[in-house]
Image 1 (cartoon, rainbow, N blue to C red):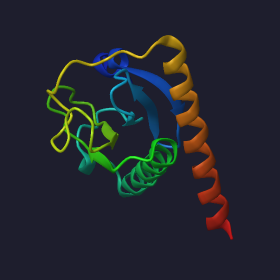
Image 2: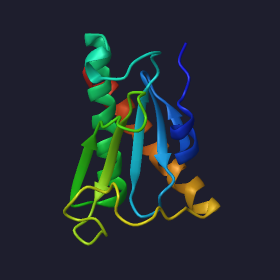
Image 3: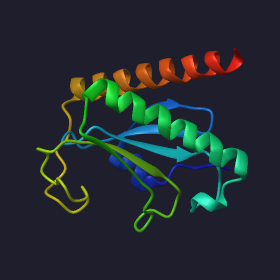
Length: 145
């Protein structure tokens, strides 16, 4: 049975449940930073997923990347699966800007997380949810012909 790791629960806010993944927003206002967690028990590596789930994960990474580009117009989208502190498979999708504090390096270990104000967190989650679901729906409609 799938259970969200306590650290992911504490460090992020729920956004939506997608076909495969639980989508969350990192509680760090410095970066538009989504986290995708495949809702599969005992999965710690990408290669632990069944091939159909691997394909679905890529589709959901693409949808979240598209949404972050549409919402924030970043210079780059970084996608990473580290798992060094949290063994549960989760994928970071981060919008990056040339003027952010960590550029051009990775975001981990640079400065302290800046919490969202409650209203800003709620809006960021709603905007991300709406944009991801709209994009996903359009892709499904297009693939049906």
